[in-house]
Image (cartoon, rainbow, N blue to C red; front, side):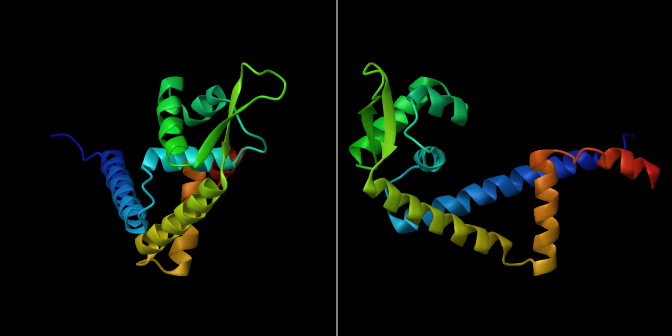
Amino acid sequence: MTAPDPDGALAEQLLRLTRRVHRIQKRHLEHRALGITPAQSRLLRTLAHYGSPPRMADLAERLEVVPRAVTTLVDGLEAAGKVRRVPDPDNRRVVRIELTDDGRTALGELRAARRCAAEEILAPLTERQRAALGGLLDTLIDGPVPGAERDAARS
């Protein structure tokens, strides 16, 4: 007989939570009727983090997708008036992508939809549980704090 796999159960819980988060965020996006897919919303959020308009290749690298996927996303967002292609001032062969005013407005709506989704997901937790979860998620996202393993071994 094999022993239970506690990490397998945790992995399954994480996958189920991820699917739930995606479902709830998608519902909140649809409720706002922005006409933006989750992938397009990710591109808009990524675009907002740049100080100046990035190249398509920069976006592809940051999003960890092939450049063709970014082209398709940008095409859809450009048709919807959320982004525009602009020539690079230093090299006219290079195209950069910038948010339009409509895109910035949509980004605000997307952020509001994400906050509403987060509130819905976190509603059953107390403030203390939320703080604990935040600390655990930081550890999972960023990895262990340097020296933490050494300190844990001493105790």
